[in-house]
Length: 302
Image 1 (cartoon, one colour):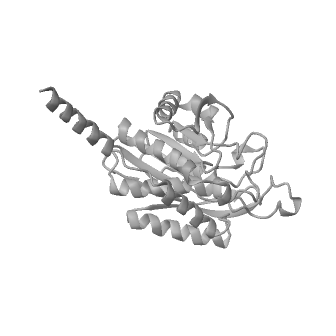
Image 2 (spheres, helix red, strand yellow):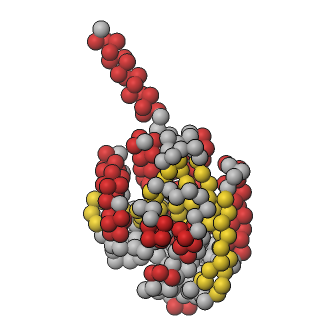
Image 3 (tube, helix red, strand yellow):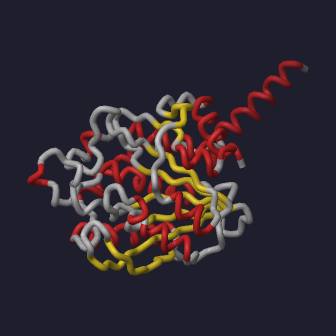
């Protein structure tokens, strides 16, 4: 009798394990590289226009009902008026509980943090700051298409996040600012932003604003990361970052947290907003840790 009970228990455990899809980190990293091959994707550039068309086509091949949210804004870093595009794709549309997953797809028009002053006014390639979060979402979209998630997913590719002036945080995140004030879909119950997660030396502490906004979900996620042995996630509260999660909370009352590694690659040197933000300084394994956490959270928690 015990033997049969063990067989049944083994079968149940195996079924539960198999119900969580694998996150393909190699394919996700390929998406990162492909984005960079378009060149800088800063607003108004040829790379921006080409990748915008590519991303829209990619999403519409998954679901023909993709929402393109057009908006006008000021690109503060250049002082130019721009037209932006947020892309929205939804999964399990009938579900009443809904989770927002977001990332920004634009890159910065200037390399204002680069040590080479002659290159400060040139746009960056944005492998980590732009491509990494987008690459994670693109892979998740393929997973959700094949494996209907247990809750509703509202996936937003935000434009115009990196258009701000250093030291003036509210000049950033124009895409999420517009989205949160003009919701084109029913309000999500909660959200997660993924940004700058491709760093080869990935270390993701708890972003301080996120902890204040949704402490319970932060504890759940970092606890799950520990359980899954995802060592990039550190159970320590560090910096405050003004990112797309702030407008979502302030304007739309969507409690949203930010998964971000701002030390790229470490505390003493940073490729952020420089011409060293390239695929060579990113890795598939880093994308894999973040993607694996999100997949397990969605398919195990709910």
